[in-house]
Length: 147
Length: 82
Image (cartoon, rainbow over all chains, first blue to last red; front, top):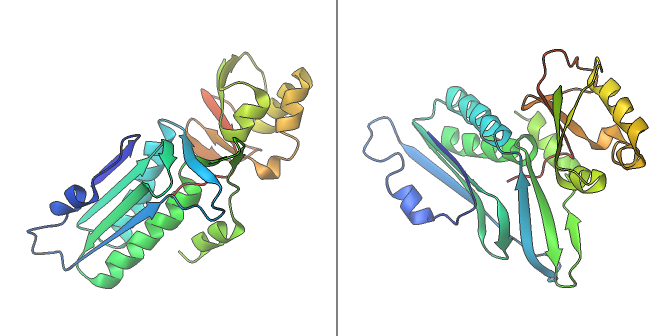
């Protein structure tokens, strides 16, 4: 299990190279990468603020639950902070399990919880120089109820 | 003594990232009332607590939670990670 909260970019290929490999109890590996999207065409950057200490603690709790519930052989969460450009990766999760359904479900669970229970806040920087905090969506809160 | 930390627009509205306060507030709600009485910036930030979240010693908590033994209180908007 590995959790990293970092400003630096991550190398997806390098992160996945050894993940869940060479084990007899792994039949499925799923990964998800979140990217900085610009729907308006007016953004220059996305800034991610977080709560050092609580962030790692909250993610560890979410990972522990996923590992226990879906009996994961391995689990990886990388989440970036600071100022990110459009089209840059923000975060990734990877899960390794015995079966495909468990690996997919655990990855979705991790994503749903990272969105609303890990202390990150996104701020959009526009070409005009204006900034706006991204509001949490009702749908994100609803997504937690299915677990 | 309790450390209070603010994040995102709560931090911007109050104009502080962190402060230490000597308080007898029994609950989070009491602490908010005490802060709001100090300066209108707090009243503006805490106007609608349904738009806020609170963490006590880095665990999510509730506004009616007791503050006894708590060292760090954090106020922030709903999280937007992922």
